[in-house]
Image 1 (cartoon, rainbow, N blue to C red):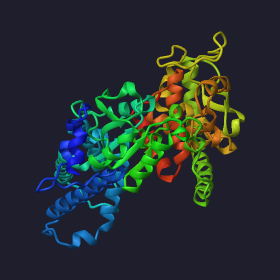
Image 2: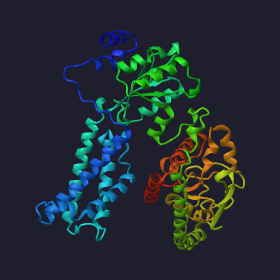
Image 3: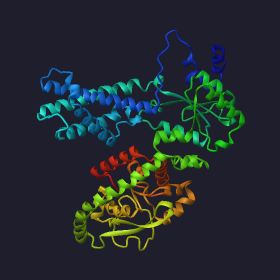
Image 4: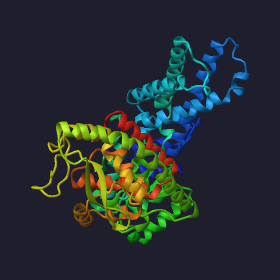
Length: 500
C-alpha cells in the first residue's frame, strides 16, 4: 500500500494536497465516523429534542421545588410529547435542519432563535397538556435554558461535525456538464473558505477520460486521471461514494463499467448524479437525466402508495369541505373591497391543465384588473405586476386568492397539495423546451405544492424548469411526511405575507 500511494503522489495533479498524504497510516489513527446526510439530520433532531426536554425538566423541577425528582420524567410524559411536537412544527417552519446552514452558526442562529421563541410561546398557552408555566420568570427561564443549550449544541456541530473525518469522501466520474453542475451545487454553502462544508460530502477529485481535462481543476476540484486509475484512487483515498455524473449512463465504456463494479466489490457506494442532486436540493435534475424515465417518473405503484393516494383524496375532500365556511365568510369582504378599489367580477376563471393533460376551469379570487390580458394575450405574471389591484396584492401576499380552488378540489380536478396547474398555452411551449415537462401531469395539480414553498414566483423559462424540478421531486416522493411539511411551510408563507 505504501508503494502504491507513493507512485500516485508523483502524479502532477495535486494529489498530495487532496488525499495521498492524508491516508498514510499513523500510530494513533484519528476516529472516522463518516455520517450520511440522513444520519446528520437525525443526529441534529435527536439532540435538539433531548436538550429541549431537558430544559423543561430542569426548569419545571426548580419551579415546583421537587428537587428534579425522577418522577418528573415519567409522570407528566405528555408534557414532553407535546413539546417535541410543537418544536417539530417550528423547526420545519424555520428550516433548522438545513445542513448547509447548520454548518455555520451565524447562518443557523436566527432560525434557532425564532424556532425556540415560537415553540416557547405556543407551548406556554396550550392548556391541560403542558405544565402550568404561569410565571413570566418561569417562561423566560425556559426560553433561555432551551436557547442556550441548543446554541451550545449547534456550536459543537458547526465546529466538530463538519470536519473531514465526519464527511463522506467522494469521487465524481465525469467532469463534463453534469459533473460541473454537481460541483457547483456542492459549493452552495455559507462558508466560502470550505465550499463543501455542511453538505456531508468532500469531493476529492474527478475521473474523466478526456485528455484535455487531465491535470485541470473543476470548481477547485482536481481531475485526477482517467478510468484506468479509478480503482487505485478510490482505494488510496479511502473513498466512501463514487458519483457517476454521466448523463447517458447506458453508453459507459466496458472498462469503466468494470472499474465501477470493482469499486462496488470493495464496499464503495456507486450513486448516479441525479440521486445526489435530489438529496441536496430536493429537485430532480431534468437536464441531466437523458432519457431515463425511471429517474423522472413516480416510484413503483406499490400497495402502500395506492393506500396513500386513497387517504389523500379523503383528506382533500374533508379539508376542502371545511374550507367552504371560511370561503363564505371572506367572499363578502373581498367583494366590498373590490367595489371600492377595483370594480369587477369577484371570481376569475382560467383554463388550466390537470391530471392526464385534461383541461379544467381553475377558480380564483380576481386579483388583477378586469380583462387584464385583453390586449396582450397570455403572458407570464411578473413580480410587482401593475395589472394587480390593491386588493389583489393583499390576496396574493396571503395566498387567499387561491382559496376558491377548494371547489376544484371537491370536483376532483385538483388536490390540496400537488404541482400548480399551468395554462395550456404555456404547457405546449414549455413541453417543447424542457425535458419531462408533461410528467408533472401524472398526479392531480394542487392549491399549494413543493415548488411553491421552495422557490420564488416564476416568470420565465428558467424559473419554469426549476419549478418543474421541484414538482417532479414531489411526484416521485409524495407521501404523508412531505405533504405535512408542505402544509406547514405554506402556513408560514401565509402568516409572513411572503406570497406573490
